[in-house]
Length: 452
Image (cartoon, rainbow, N blue to C red; front, top):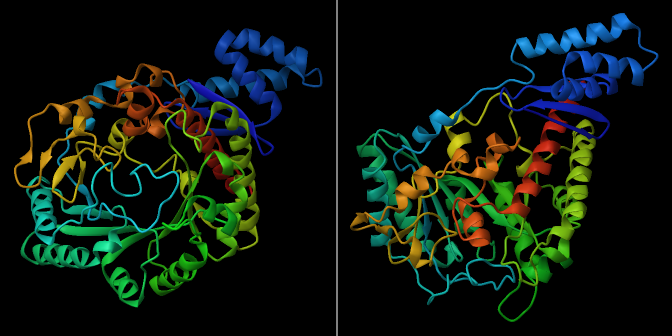
């Protein structure tokens, strides 16, 4: 299978199975597509007809080159990875999302967690529950050395004391065992102070900071309980934390809802503030949500992604480059095959923990009792849920099997699939289409860098 498209002046041919990317001229672009569908004789005849300036020798040489690429497995390759899919999820636990706070000091209009409460009464995780979660992670991690913990909420800094205690507990386990912990903090930034900055710079491998872009954009969605905006309060704190980290990992994570499908301006605003690690996520919502993205918004969103990719290339040449999370793609180097088949590891390698210690497949499933998987004290219950997620690979989805982007998205987000289709093995159609456009942009950027 091949995928052909034109973007930013480039004619791009992706060989799906091998991952080979070819940037070609108009003649070769047409010849490859005809060759795939109708064979070499038809391709040769059509090329000679449509491009009369070509000599027979030149056209024959082009067809020969195409055949050579096919022979070397760089075009029209056919490799089946389906047999490896069963092993892709047969992995021990390696990561936990600790929802240390089911409370929040913001009331964001698009919050999937019901303003941090997850459809329940606001609670904070005790340090003892956090310790039990760390113990379960270590106990269930097999021979994995590197373990990953994300402090999440609600707003985790509302329970900063417990965060500190849990990290300290895990660090002690590092000294007595063969495990190495990597911590991430996801915060809205309101409670950042010097103590938080010092701690995160010392202990956090990554910090995710929420900001939606321009003041008007941010304050339309990210609100205080009294309805006021948050940009003015959050920005100086986020900037100070990033400056103090001195190059250590962070990223600014924005969200764009229906009313902000011109998010290009928000990404550029963040870049011009000096932030270099950026993400702007499309909101995921119920179909009837006032802020939800609809199919009619897709053409405009695609245009924004293309505009952003082109602008990023210009800024790189000017020495003002920045990273956009969704354009981070390494066709040659990763992720590994098993990760491409199985995705993020939801419900198998990765679990979320509530303040009460209950276990869910990930933070997006928290509060949905249908997906309760046990607790940190008794461990994983024998509900069959883990097996359901283990079997849920890219090849278990009928719609994914013939998709050119399947090995890049790994079948997509199971939570998005469930909340849009009622099935973790279903398809979130809007998300699929946006993902494919982002992959096209990312591949184009790779091509542009190679030819510049």
